[in-house]
Image (cartoon, rainbow, N blue to C red; front, side, top):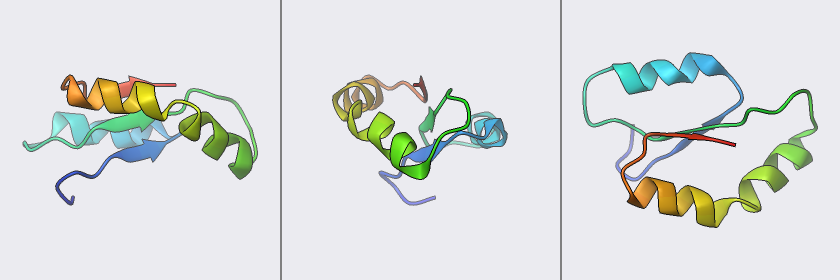
Length: 64
């Protein structure tokens, strides 16, 4: 995984990245039901400040 990368997913399988070997890649886990791609993107875009703050604070799992 590239340095500075963040995984954004609705799939809990990606949480395994947090159990591997460092360096860990932060995961933004979209905890929303069925939705369109546009709705998922809007959820991320509308929470960019929250995501950035969490990553800067060292959080590895950000649930939206």
